[in-house]
Amino acid sequence: MLSNFEICKLLNIEYPIFQGGMARLGTTELVSAVSIAGGLGIIGSSDAPPDWLTDQIRQTKAKTDKPFGVNILLLTPYLEENLKVLVDEDVKIVTFGAGNPGKYIPALKEAGIKIMPVVSSVALARRLERLDIDAIIVEGMESGGHVGDTTTMALLPQIVSSVSVPVIAAGGIADGRGLVAALALGAKGIQMGTRFICSDECIAHPKFKESIIKAHDRATVVTGETTGHPVRCLENKLTRQFMTLEKEGVPISVLEELGRGKLFSGVIQGNIEEGSLMAGQIAGLIKDIKPVKSIIQEIMLEAEQIISALNKYK
Ligand SMILES: Cc1cc2nc3c(=O)[nH]c(=O)nc-3n(C[C@H](O)[C@H](O)[C@H](O)COP(=O)(O)O)c2cc1C
Image 1: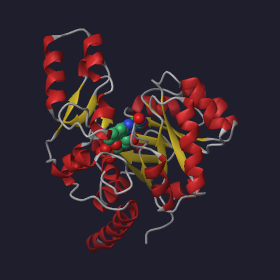
Image 2: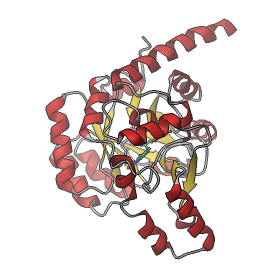
Image 3: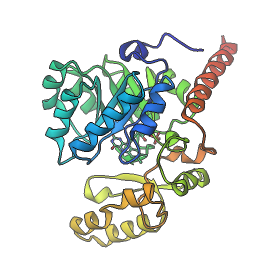
């Protein structure tokens, strides 16, 4: 099996594969399975309150002593409280989504926490590199959830050429080919969201997992461009309604109201048409639901075979 990954040494993990901290789905079930399988599981705290986060961290620690992380969404109303939970519960790794975590970094470093912000532009990557971060996750617009506007293929090498910290690639990766492509573009590892939703351990509703399996290459759309918070989801009745209202130019408050509670409704309760089904463009490649361990092992094996096969060009 491939080895010698710098990011594995840094984080004390076996394989250079992160499970992106997903809102509603990055729970202890998936996180512990990924970490036990040798990747990095990441709890998605999104807009959850501090008692939920505390409980998820404790449950994960009870299941495994392998490293895991917490994703903090900078838009959460519980930001200060959840950052305190990280320190109180002795969390070792944090990733940040949706913004610039700059002012929170010194206190977290003081507490010995490794910090990996998620970025979707060269400018933010450069700005954050000046602070004391350990690695950076570069997320292209193919990914599920909140997105920027540049593809992984174009953004990743530009950020790799602009910073000296290790870079992790996210967005549009679901197999060994994606891992090798990311390594070729200069990444030290990958982060996946959509692929891990279709695992046995993810608590996503079976109907949502089935929607990903049925998805084709153009099954996702980006809504919310006009609100400043674009989100990639599988197209359904909700996204069509949302986009119609956006075209009509309704006030942002109307769009916010329409979106309220819809992620839970879609991904947990299985309301496939009325709920929000955040997922990435790579959904079209995912054709099965399997254990996390198989997902990780198959990716590593496929990557190794591709790297050997590429030697024929020598
Ligand atoms: C349902 C869902 C929820 C997500 N929630 C978050 C989040 O709360 N914070 C975050 O930083 N990224 C979030 N993401 C992004 C993932 O962590 C990951 O970077 C992304 O899914 C990678 O792209 P992929 O879906 O093509 O694998 C979410 C993605 C999905 C699909």
